[in-house]
Length: 230
Image (tube, rainbow, N blue to C red; front, side):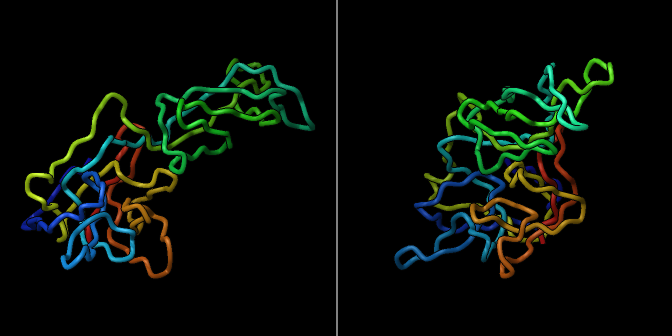
């Protein structure tokens, strides 16, 4: 998803589309050579040129940011000064078909089954929440972020008829839910482009250029990052 917040006098440009690329609006574009032609597809972060405003996807994905997960009640055992779970404890996320590489859980680590959206807190995990207020921890509280495939929604292709892809390449303010959810996005942070064409605060290498600045951080209510494209 791409939401244009302020474009000013900017206008997008269109290039011949890379026939091998799959992309969603909000991903970042890059030029390449295909045969004897210059075409445009998804950036690997090394030479980004702008923001894609077209779709060619077999399925759609979106982000969940800072979702609170509470597992319990659990009858813990005391180990030293801590209370821990004596068994593995499972909890279900709100969604399934999760991109495993996008998943992050803080402050408590857990194991993820991406297909069914089940997380497991392993035996020995510290109980960090007292749900019933009796002074003894009896639950596990963590905060997760991830990207998942939207179920029962087929993909789309907006470039077949024209054979061209639309790209915003001048300074604009926009928002997208296509970003690396395993990173944090403080206001005014520099944004780079990941190896898969997503915005991120992670710089993949010293040669990857900064392309934008965060103007609005993603939250559990609005799971998109707002940015000023440079």
